[in-house]
Amino acid sequence: EREPSPVLEALRAYPKQIALAAGSFVAAQVTFYILVAFVIAYGSGPSGLGIPSGTMLAGVLIGAVVMIPGVIVSAILSDRYGRRSVIMLAAAALALWGFALFPLIDTRSLLWISVGIGVGQSLVGAMYGPQAAFFAEIFETRVRYSGASLGYQLGGILGGGLAPIIATPETNFAIADSSSRMRSGSLWVYRTLADSPSAALAYTGASPASSATRSPRCR
Image (cartoon, rainbow, N blue to C red):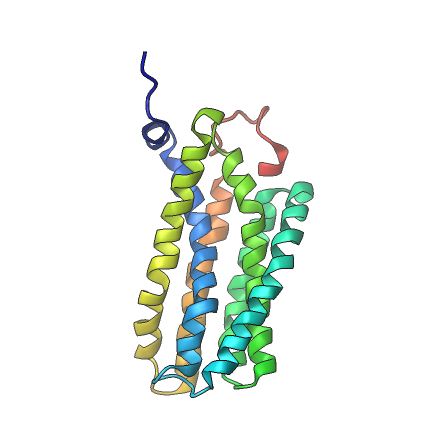
């Protein structure tokens, strides 16, 4: 007898898990691409702050380096305290940091630009670290790869693909003065990240495994 496609089986049996995996990943993707792409246009673009592109690129490069320990440390912590707890804490901290990011870039100082992007990237890394194991733990073995991949790719499309498209016109709409631009960009980051703790919370009870067999790290 021909085995059913695991992709179709995952879509049929576990749509909630796929949607929740995508929801938690959207926030990390949105903020990552804002921190590596949108901030350069914000600081150095024609309608931006007039910061030299080399300064913004240096800040992004420093942020990418700082992200590495964030991934490693959060993965280790998630083994001890649980995936959901680490993801929720990192998302909440990143949502608040969004209000500091744009004011720090507005200083036009490489030091403070690097601090703003670096802290943001370390928190993005803290969300990335536990997610691979977290996604695997909410699907049964027979559809685990397909289910985790669907959630990951959907979150990547929604978060990474749409973030710059939406952020640029929304922020530029308030470009009449720098304070309006800062508030618009910060609020956009906050609104997106506010959804991630909700998605992580919704994982409770979403796993196909029973509460007796579910990994305690997924709780």
